Length: 121
Image 1 (cartoon, one colour):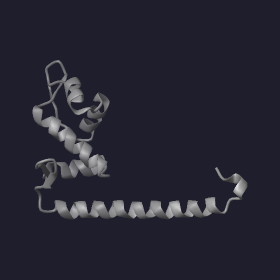
Image 2 (cartoon, rainbow, N blue to C red; image 1 turned 45 degrees about the horizontal axis):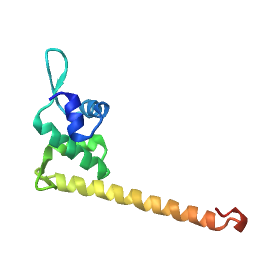
Image 3 (cartoon, helix red, strand yellow; image 1 turned 90 degrees about the horizontal axis):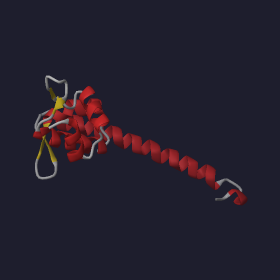
Image 4 (cartoon, one colour; image 1 turned 120 degrees about the vertical axis):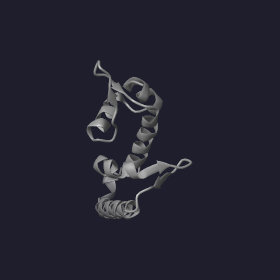
């Protein structure tokens, strides 16, 4: 299938699919005309990429973990022995970022609470 069809089937913009290719996440073949040719498996790959992005992973990390995942009834299952530890480190990184954001929010709440009443929105 060509990039337009993959875009329609996955809901991902063509430009973003090209970006995934640049990042080494997708590997379409090329026709003699230069057009990209995607296989049926690429639909699932794009869905896995989207799931991993939604989970907070960046594309560099996804490029490493993607080959070690398979779909199993609507969930991703690790297939490489070191992947669980790597994903645990990513979860710890995300948890630290959440903690930092909570701290920032608390600081803003303190500043907002100190404002004179007539400034309240």
